[in-house]
Image (spheres, rainbow, N blue to C red):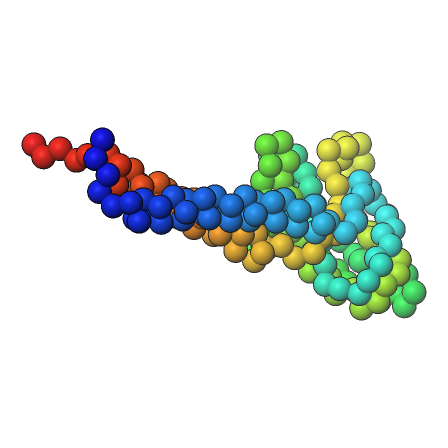
Length: 180
């Protein structure tokens, strides 16, 4: 075995390890931030109360079975219990492009809610069909996540490409090329 350049091999190996460590760090950050983004959650029922601990902007999501579509006719009213201030929302096809798909469920964004103060908020769901099974559906209040997730996924891709290129550079230093 013939070694072409020892400093280049050491540099490529160090880059591979650095990109690997960075990749693990980005993945751990993605998983942790996905856990803490959810502020409140509950079953999809006609009326429900949520307690919000800090004023912030939240995203109202509906988690439904992956191939379900009965949420499209629903109307959501979010009412601040202390002041009576109300916000109305409906499913919007353009906003739903930010849906997150799992294996059996999908989370569809309905709209953004500005929580001006901490306290109790009531969510009314209008349009639920009597006798329909909504046991697999949930209402969720989440911090906005789409831009953060896009940046973290780009970070994962960049780290993976960096690892691959540094591995190829290290192998190029070790393995001989044969001319045909």
